[in-house]
Image (cartoon, rainbow, N blue to C red):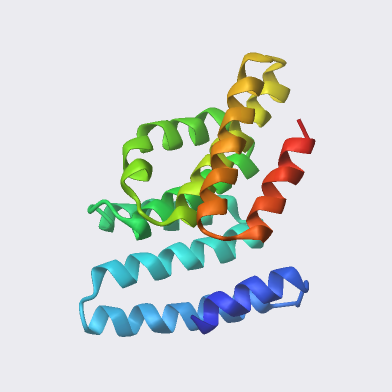
Length: 177
């Protein structure tokens, strides 16, 4: 948890070497989880390290870490869903919008089963952002109406989660269409 917080705060406040410090702390937790053979927590920690790489702009490393984590997260659940969402962010950052769309589309059933409204809302937000990016990069308006619909569904999930900050983020994203 400390490594994840350092990564997030370091990114937000642009603290030099924060991602490296976070990676080191998260690696220590992986070492511990390996000694107690907690495969789910190992994969979750690798997901967090992947986001450190993403924040540093090392997209290939982030992608590799996320793919490794997803190989271990074979059961459907929130941890797998979060890893898939992070992989989608990595692919969008790399302007690989069709890959991101494929990840989200192929795993739609998983996100329907997840009970966490914040995760569901994040799924719809990432899908909407991916569709918006596809519309702009390919100059195809057909994706825009789908994106607006996904943003509406995201807003509804964040409303159920009682998360006004994420709802405001959705409203901001809609304004970018």
